Each structure stands twice: as C-alpha cells, then as structure tokens.
Amino acid sequence: MGSGTGLELRPMYFTSSEKSLYCDVSTDTVRPYVTKSFPLQIFNHIYNLSHPGVKATQKLVAARFVWNNINKDCALWGSSSCIDRFTRLPEAFPIPYQSADTIACAFFARMDF
Image 1 (cartoon, rainbow, N blue to C red):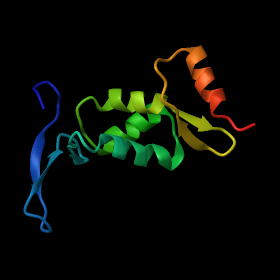
Image 2 (cartoon, helix red, strand yellow; image 1 turned 120 degrees about the horizontal axis):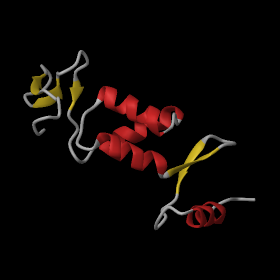
Image 3 (tube, one colour; image 1 turned 60 degrees about the vertical axis):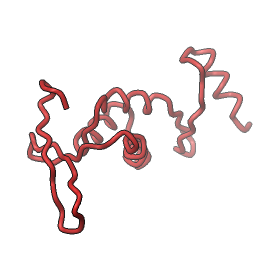
C-alpha cells in the first residue's frame, strides 16, 4: 500500500504453509490483505448473512479485511442488490444505469405476480 494509508502490512507465516499472508498489523485486530480475485466473494459471504445494509456491511468487512478501495467496492456491490422484503432473499439485476425508471422496469420485469 502507498504511504499515507495508515496500514502496516507485514508477512505472517503459518505452520500449515510455507507461504506468507500479508496482513495489516496497525490495529489490535490483524486483518489479511485481500488480493484482486477475492473481495467480491468476501463481501457476499458477509452481506448474505443478514443483509445489514451498505454502511453496516462496509464496517463489518473493513473490520476484518483490507484491500484497495474497500469502502467504494462495498458501496457499489451493496447498492446494486435488491432485497425481496417478503422472503428476505436478495436478487441482483444488471441495469445499464441507476435511474428510477430503469430500476423500476428491471424490478417489475422480474416480479412474479
């Protein structure tokens, strides 16, 4: 990470592996640095536990992990999911841009009445 981030990345070694895992040790909680291929999986695992909302998910993820643009990614992924309030199941719809008309059309096109 670049200077000014406040992160203190250090390699951590485990007895079960010869490879190291870089972790932020700048706080009392050691947080692993996540490479580019895993952030969405981590976000989905935490978000899908209870669908806590964007801000709460950002806090939960950032308290446990570190990656570049973590808050921006969580905000993007959290705001692009739709929750069925009856079943509490998330549904994601690809949309070209966020406008009320586009979101409403995408939502109603996939509803089973």
